[in-house]
Image (cartoon, rainbow, N blue to C red; front, side, top):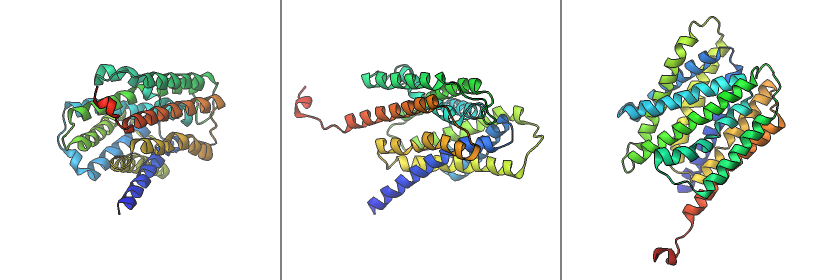
Length: 303
């Protein structure tokens, strides 16, 4: 029974990463404007999460709204970046969060900088340079790759602020039962903020099809809402390194869907840089996991 439960949670985590990975291609497939896709997607997600997670409807504080604002910025900037550059660049640049967390850790979380952190960040920085060094062809699905890449860098920065904020809230609530609920509340608040921010630029809707409505509903209910629920449920049971490995499905498959559906082909340097970014983040997780699992020696206890 225990084994089947673990296997089910692994499947949930894979499904969450799979759903996350479809965002890039789905966003590009919608004929609505970037502000409309971003706003309506987040509006639907806020409602879906509020309905599916009743425990997250209470206990909101100013911290919920503060971290929610960073999360909202992440959601908006990712859509804007994804519509202007390739899906590969958008998701890989969002994955540069460890680069910013190196500086946010000591400032916000009072965490010490370790040597492995410096190595990981150096590798991530090298991946970013490699990714941005190649010239992206201007195509229908990536009309302004330069601006899209800049927004992608900003997405990574605000995503790092979101992660740091979540960890900050988690440390304050350590030992209480409200940690997962507060994280879910932050996700709901973030999606609501994103919807309200985008709404003035999203209205009026001068055109739209049934297909556009279906894509927005899919993005809000499944690509964000259901994926978030599967992720939070599975992370309670799946070990950290295994979870980090399974979550690589998102950055690996995200460009693949855009290539299969839209014929979008990122440059070789972008793929190489993205691979370096993803592997660096995974390597850092592996090192941290191996250190935490290392048995304590008797000599260490006597120090």
